[in-house]
Length: 182
Image 1 (cartoon, rainbow, N blue to C red):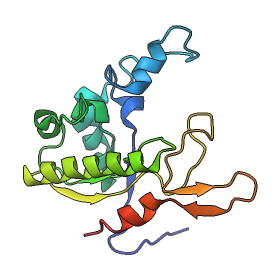
Image 2 (image 1 turned 180 degrees about the vertical axis):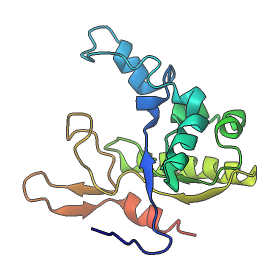
Image 3 (image 1 turned 180 degrees about the horizontal axis):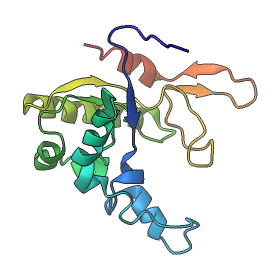
């Protein structure tokens, strides 16, 4: 069977930051893995060491014929403390590689907090762009409240979902973020 995809079709592979980078000691997941009484079977540790080997990973993907590679950069490396962006870290990992932010959000029931968090993230993204980082797009996580980390309690969504009727209820953050469109 011959498959033909249209011109410009993206063909790629993905990895996730915490799952592959390793030693994300400032991340919430690292803290959870190492907390007393943690139920994590095995801490992430060095993971796949993609933090130091990401170019090798990209070369492997490109060598296999993939045109796109979605990889994660653990946000706690980029923003090691609230409101402080490490431009050196951004330059070290990203340089002039075009990037699209594919997941950025916060688990909170307080939608005003979601808006404030997202506004600060967009401000930081804009500052990175002004510093020369080639950012091509931004995708918010998540449109919907959904199943996260073994529970429906973390609410990342711009839209609430009733667990019985599945009725969607837009939160103010949906209209706010939609209104930020360039």
